[in-house]
Image (cartoon, rainbow, N blue to C red; front, side):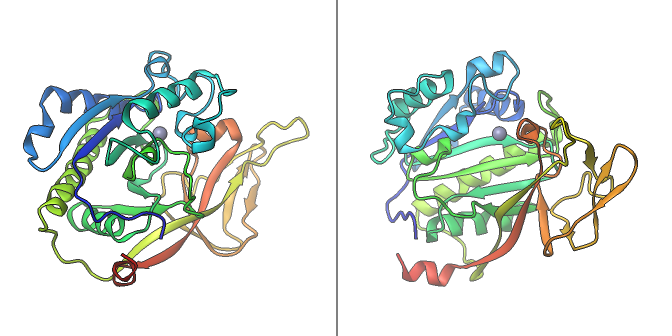
Length: 304
Ligand SMILES: [Zn+2]
């Protein structure tokens, strides 16, 4: 177990614009602030953050480095890291953390994906509280997939890791730099469901849950094939484009080369996520691999 809360959640931070070209969360945070969304909840206060204003202005994911990889404790304490996002991470940590002794109890960080990730609930902690949160979101929202980091790092690099509790909500597919109401509405529903859960938790009124939470856990990535000049020389196979978490078996087509030839998958059976994600082209990543992992809420409750 990596984290646990038996304490009530008294302060929640809603974050958009951690990635500057994911507009849905930015507009949802602004609208939520206008509508004073926090007024609907009695047991906690709600604060708002538009995280990376410079990247938003530039309509880019980031300026120097990915802000959502800047929140490891070691990096926050490293005075030699002086890039735009490294400095920004330190100031966000000062204002809403600091990590390890945070004035914020829970962070919801809003993201989008260009891949068909449906409603992707990303958890980085597997204590009872977070397993119950993910189970609740599965109960009340359609097409939720819960994903977790393979190693569930002790000192995570996500912005939401500066608080002891949190979740990353990622809705897709939607192009970068675009707004679509359906995506906005899904993000809004997931955000409100998170806040509803926190309220129910605080007043000891959570519903009952089944014991098992099914999640997908990332374990690897597949890069695009490249030529001798290190240029990408194939696209993701058309049969995979737009698919949500498809299974891939040995021998299935995975890429189509620009000369028209299929490239077949030659690994163990797997599940694919982030297929053709635009944000990963800078690293020539074509897709991520995950496997189902089930968590037991009963076991987690014994670890409390
Ligand atoms: Zn993002």
